[in-house]
Image (tube, rainbow, N blue to C red; front, side):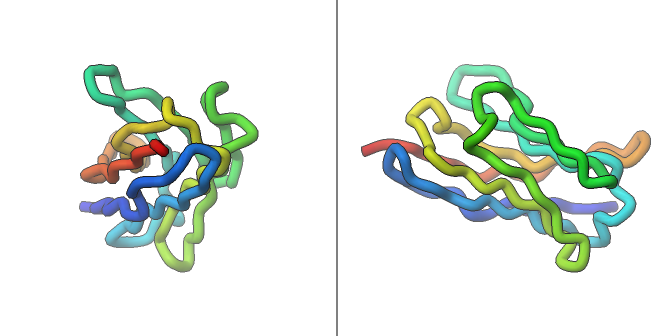
Length: 115
């Protein structure tokens, strides 16, 4: 029912910043968990950040202090602010929504960190 569309990816130099957006077709107010995953070429998809309907957040150790997940229920959008980017952050980033048994993935947006 709900669809997710990521945007904001691109090429950035090490140390730079990007903000990814995940726009949902419908309200995310009742979504239990909104998450960001990433997948580098040849690697498994890994969890990057989670935000609950109550606003609680958690992060992978590799991005703590650099990334921040947030949500704007009025805009039906979740964001991932990425600062101090490193080459190892290069990956396709995916938005994910979970509400009960409903699990939805976005199509992904590519982030490339390179000089």
